Length: 77
Image (tube, rainbow, N blue to C red; front, top):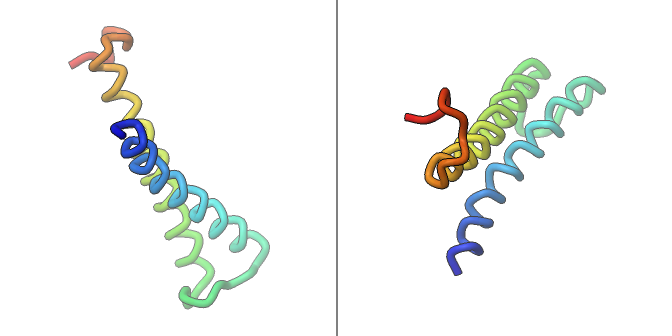
């Protein structure tokens, strides 16, 4: 049950990052989606979604590896 909850917790930022990549791709092809009034805003929000999604995933992995003791000395607390 714990693994399923961890998977769901990691799935949400993954979907957020994928949506951010889609927003940035649509901006590069000059396709404005409905809730966004300008292309620059769409690209900026896409970048923020990607950074938050990947950052959450990376922080989760770093925290897990710190608990296991498998990180190098510069990443230990």
